[in-house]
Image (cartoon, rainbow, N blue to C red; front, side):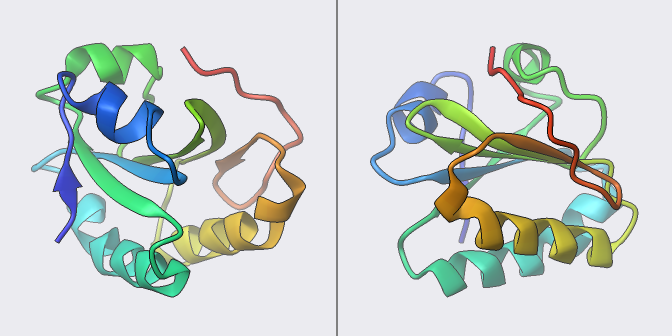
Amino acid sequence: MVLSVSEQTFTQEVLESAIPVLVNFEAPWCGLCRIIQPLLLQFRTQYNGQIKLVRVNADENFKLSNAYKLKSLPTLLLIENGIVKYRLESFRAREDLLLALEVIKDSCAHKSSQTYIGNKVPDLEYRSA
């Protein structure tokens, strides 16, 4: 089960979390959002309590969608200590998500901020809103 977070609970559940949080911005009409859900659950299981997975309905939480400048769904944000560490967007397939999750796994120790777009990871800093 994935915790659903709203604008009212986002600060407490995400920004103030003691562990990193992978925020999945999705919408009920988004087919790819439903397809990647099992992969996200598997990723969370692999971290065995070291990462929290939450979902945000982008349609119902417009202020959050706007604050984090969503361009497409699904968009995933890895937030640690209230700071966006990774932004993963523009998925075209499950393989894109798997590649992006591997990037997170491999570089969590580096503690850098990056954006994943399609099949590449540019060295761009992302500043959270």
